[in-house]
Length: 142
Image (tube, rainbow, N blue to C red; front, side, top):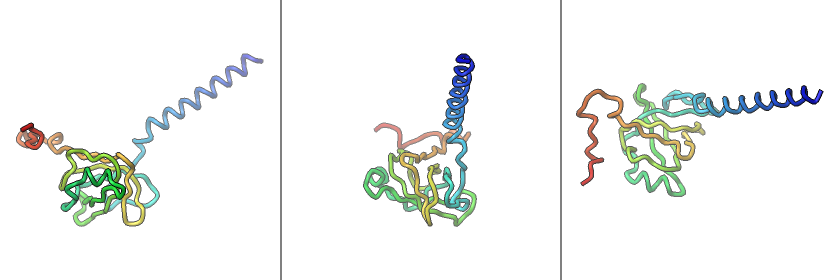
């Protein structure tokens, strides 16, 4: 009887740990990628779009401040669709106007409130076959 109880406890523990491992492994993959025009309140999204012209030039300093960084993201596929993003955390060196970004968060009212340190700025040279676009003049030491 003791052997059977131990077996049931061991199997139950294995099922719980397996479930936890699956939940943590697939948790990020369950978030939906969306553009500014596809957001709805109450759901966590990975917002994908282009940094709108006029983003603050001192983005790194503002992201570390109490009010955080506020910038606009334009939809890549739907012209005229734009949303303001509130972000706090580190800002990638490649963050600038016109750059494609992905940020995780939720829509709250008319603003997208991003999770801390979830901003990723994509480098366009990684997605092209054109060798002229793969050079980064700003990254060459002087």
